[in-house]
Amino acid sequence: MKTTPPGNYRWIICALLFFATTINYLDRQIIGLLKPVLSEKFHWSEIDYKNIVKAFQASYAIGLLLFGRVVDKIGTKLGYTVSIVIWSVAAMMHALVKTTLGFGVVRAGLGLGEAGNFPSAIKVVAEWFPKKERATATGIFNSGANIGAVVAPIMVPFILGVYGWQMAFIITGAIGFIWLIFWLIFYEIPTRQKKLSAEEFEFIHSDIDEVIAPSAEEKPVAWKQLLKFKQTWVFIFGKMLTDPVWWFFLFWLPSYFQSTFKLDLSKPSLPLVIVYSASTIGSIGGGYLSSYFIKKGWPVFKARKVAMLIFALCVVPIVFARYAMTIWQAVALISLAVAAHQAWSANIFTTASDMFPKRAISSIVGIGSMAGALGGFFFPDFIGYILQSNKDAGHILVGYNIIFATCGGAYLLAWAIMHFLVPKMERVNLAK
Image (cartoon, rainbow, N blue to C red; front, side, top):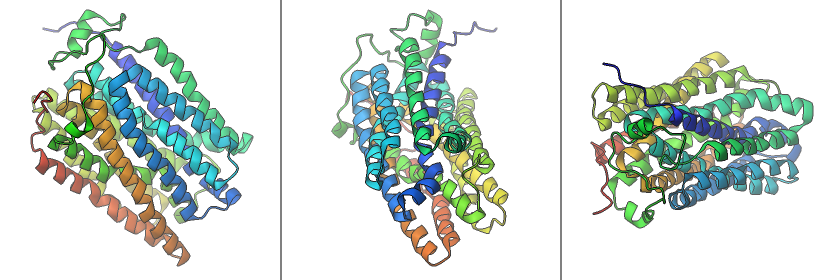
């Protein structure tokens, strides 16, 4: 016997998260595409560029920790609003910069603001979706990261050619304010959303025993208390070991294709479009796979663990990128890796809401994502040193080979640590 669909307002909320994440990654991706132009104009070395990336990463790491706490305290609606205002203003301010130091400063501002995206979005998913749909919803909104990365190689060269590099930053930064209008109109937590039907509200809370009160909210949980749980450290290690790989793909992949295969970044870049399109498929498909396992009757922890092991194995073939003789062979291997990363990402974010109650989710996402950003902060040192030393020796491809080999094993190591720390991903009881 078929039941009446509970309604679809939650998917409107998911669409808002998707577009916010698209804008988030569009704004951060631009500098990688403009690197050749900006390097020539401001005389950047690989070390200079590495330092600019690190300025973003350091601020992003701090911002994740702060926004995780802030969003748990002030709520998702206001928290997201503050975040996108800060990052959109910082993105537009890139157009005013005249020095390398100035780029470091505005990148730091961008990182601070963009840090609010994922702590806010993951908590919104926990507020608006039952567990059996959370990985799918996370995969959909997380695919916005890939759409932003797909749009950027098409949009940025066009703006660059017609209006110059300053307008690339101004136009993309301004898009955030357009999104903010729709966010303020359509978003509220379920208990306050008058457009939400009673049937859909009941469905959202069908597999959990907590409902957020209209008044908001219970006190956020102290970081000190959260760090006592193995579940927190599972999320920390999972993010710390794998997030830096995505940062590498985001900030250095355009440069890799240019230096290795002479890709012209002043024109729309089909190889980059294909790579980031693959990551979109991975994000949505990865979220769907564990949700499919759950609907088949698997325990939640088993569904997440098996899915994440599959994705970890799919990253390994990137070690063979060193043998790629053509750009399309490299595109195929890298596409598989980035798709697997985003599939992994959709699931590891969902483990936070599997293991922790809603009032702690933003804080957990902030702590774990900060660990990932710290990994991303130190990884550029390794990347910059390897690339610059091999570039000076006339063997930059060797440098990329070393980096790809490192990326290939990171996910299996992360999965093993997560599995042995918390085999069944038991839910935390914060009342103890």
